[in-house]
Image 1 (tube, rainbow, N blue to C red):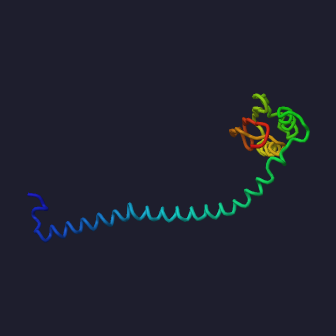
Image 2: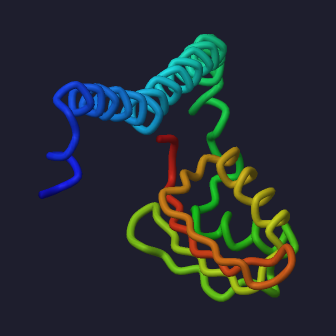
Image 3: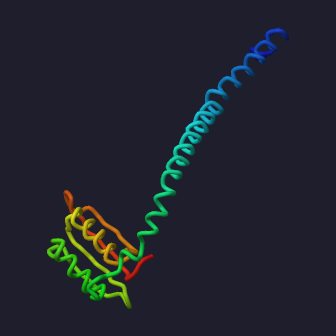
Length: 157
């Protein structure tokens, strides 16, 4: 005979109701409450994203207006020549591993142990001169130094 069978009918009912209440309380504490809290956090994030989007929309129009017309190369040199000269002017000549043409209006660049800040500044200048960065990957090679690969194309996006 088990301990449960030894209890009176009234005690078994009280035990069953107590177990049901315990299951409900634990279900609330472990499942429902965390779900409700994360839903509120997601609502807050959605509101913040909506504010950010409302702030960015007017700027997108201004940036689009400044787009391709301001990026035409002024000197008439090829993309390969502009990239090679630009890298040397930016002080990245020692890091330059290769500048290879990749078809009409496309150049692949490999840099080894390049100064990251100088590389980013050069990339901004290349875009301002009419290049489009289609691929870019970098791996840290030291403090403030990277090994990088880029694929640039002629023209605006």
